[in-house]
Image 1 (cartoon, rainbow, N blue to C red):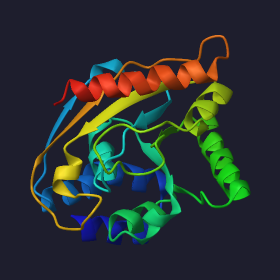
Image 2: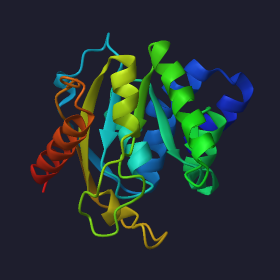
Image 3: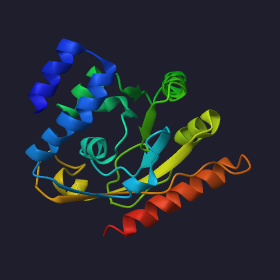
Image 4: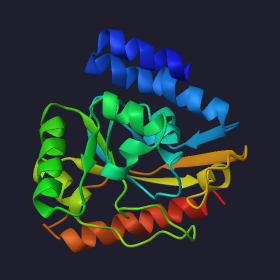
Length: 216
């Protein structure tokens, strides 16, 4: 399924088709190859007619196909540029026009967020990892402002999402694959209150931590 989705993408090269394929073909193929059993809860919190900025904790490169599959929206990921080099996952993200951020270059990083903002204005859904990198301890790290500034500026809701178990399948310390159950829990959409960006960030980090604790 992985190879087939890449071949179809090269033939059609339709952004809409590629995002749909990411959820229905590419992601299930990756998860199947890795021996992942996926459990998802909280889908009922989402309105299919609304766009969101999803924010999730980051444990493994496998978070990307797991979230593609779990969230019933056409996701556009914003991720660090190093992901381009990851076999299959990075290649597919690059080919489908996902947004890569060069964290070493402030101007390029800002340009990437502007690009994400344009997607939101077109009614697209964006997913970001506010920690900025994979957790080596399993704990949720500090959240950066980018996703929350983006949501505030676009006047749309942020949806906190918790991921559990992907690091058991593909650890950030190795490329050895070990089949394991993965759980994802989708929280309640929420908006910034009184332009308090720090409070907005703190609330969503607290929600991700709470959601993750419910999956253990």
